[in-house]
Image (cartoon, rainbow, N blue to C red; front, top):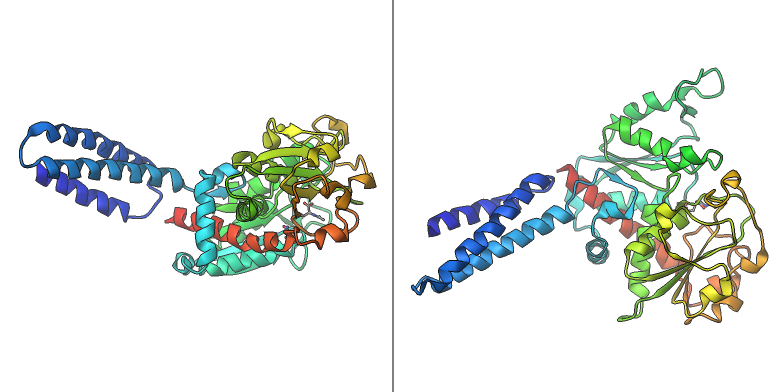
Length: 399
Ligand code: AN0
Ligand code: CP
């Protein structure tokens, strides 16, 4: 019987070292070992000299069951990255981020002989630089394509007679792009005219459907998950130990109509994390419940700021939740919502955060963004870390 257990033990060790992407199989193995552990345990009472040995066997199988279950949970095949749940377990992802920050080239072997394609339909400074850096940390080759600068203008709608200024359709362009890479990042902002098209992520989903490659959002119509993950890493690094922080997401004015992707993802990730979230904005700016769930909404900005540990400012246009006809419109430019020392005075000496780019003295005063409590620069730097964790997970899932 002992030889049988040793045989199974060896098989399991082989299994553990055989890489990821075998979710169902690992699950079965985990169950199998979980079953073996209690089978070994009754022999403990056998009174023979084998007692200690059997005890070790029981522990061994119980441990294997746990490890395999854990492996199954953490190494879910990550083919797309759009939502917090794609990382499965936020705490594990945060631990991985801390590890990678200490040793950012640790997984350099994963990207060898693989290429990441970063497709930008919109401008970017941080996402462009940090995602390239992250890819290189992992040994990936990187190709960056700015669709609107030098590529053919792309048609994204189906069934259109293409006799206008668009020379090529996404349906041809995507498989062609995909043939030169192993993983694709896409930046495609919300159009802010057709809520349904934006909230069903029509462009990102075409990449997912027609590329045959893992696809991650670098801010798509409704979400900016690499930003929200970097925001969470930053909060984790600056939170007071032993205290559940109060995090306030505040709307602030802006002269242009901006997407809801950043506040959507920020709310979604904060709700998944160990923090108390309060959202504050003028009426009409209610975010989609898909992202904001039943988070506490406070329409009085000063009251929302009371005792805050972190203040996260962002402008967004009307999400069309309570005012469907106003989707994508500017409903207010009220300068009293600009974050200044006046609001910060009622916080617990809160840290100030913004994803950048930020318009000074429109979103936030010089005084607040330049104060020692401002985290905007470390927050941007953490974009390299969030992207490294996400690309690592996606490369691991490719096997
Ligand atoms: C974009 C937005 O609000 O979604 C990108 C932020 C990361 N911001 C602007 O266009 C100013
Ligand atoms: N925060 C952010 O995504 O910045 P960029 O638009 O410059 O990439």
